[in-house]
Amino acid sequence: MPLGAAQLSPGVYSDPANPLRADGSGGGVFQRSWTVSGNDTPRAGLRMVTVRVSWTDSQAHSTRVAAYVRCSTIPCP
Image (cartoon, rainbow, N blue to C red):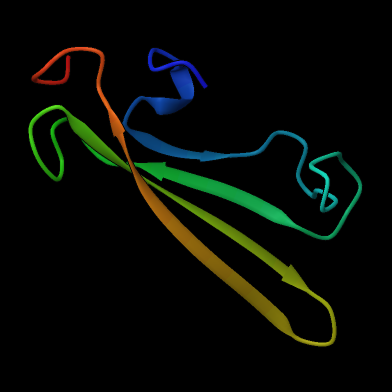
């Protein structure tokens, strides 16, 4: 996504195509959501994005990964 994408504004989001297949297309078993931290968190000019994917086969599973995204200006607008 470009740095100015609406989905990189602070908030909680879920994929509109949920549930997903492994290739990202609709109709699968995976649920994907992501949380974007507030401006300048954890430090000036950054936001933290945490993505969570969950699915159920014989039991429920979930995994998370986090990364930092640089804001287009410092401090974040």
